[in-house]
Image (cartoon, rainbow, N blue to C red):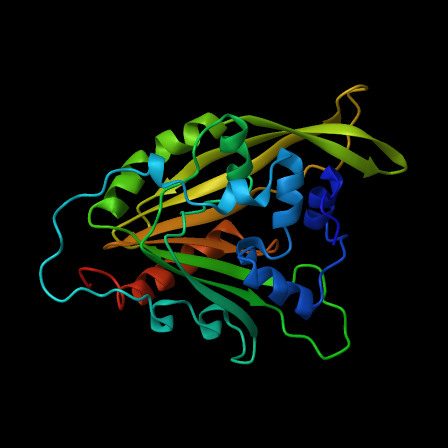
Length: 286
């Protein structure tokens, strides 16, 4: 895989015209903690011109203060697999390919492009968790058959925050996204026989609230335009909006997304199921 994919490769991903990595490459990326968008993360980094270390390294110096009061009664620590979505929740067979990982002190990641937007403005990404567990569902395919475009079905990250941290994260979420309400990314492109430097105008906004768990928001990402910075001509097709559901249950926060064929309505339904699963690991329980 190249270190610096062109800008248009992200657009082509949304148009179902991209080379998909084989299983070994996908699993290698998962071990390097780029699992959160198995087929998109490298293109995101190229748009921003920043390193992967910038996106994933916790920065505890800027972490929000945690509340000092611990919950009463038994306290759950590890996030077990029972608290995660299951293949059947997505209408998939139990043999569906599933990549999982767990971590300590991982920052909450809403979206990889938000992970490019904020550092480009010298803003912190960090809201550290205590523990986290993540998974990605992939389409199953016979051995020797190349993955079809759209092979990622769903992605889920679940984070356990310090006491009071989940509530504080939701209280500050609007402010966290404000600098990225409209953001301009710049990078090289190749499209329809033309090459040059392209810019894309991105927009993030919260479109729904309180539809699951103890609190939830739906974040919509739009690419408003793509154009050559010199000529002003289009530099790629404008992709469809994408969505992320952010759900709170007790001291847990989950970030849930669907593959490129997923709809907002499907994500809303899946969010309710995810919140129910999270009850089994939350402090306090449901």
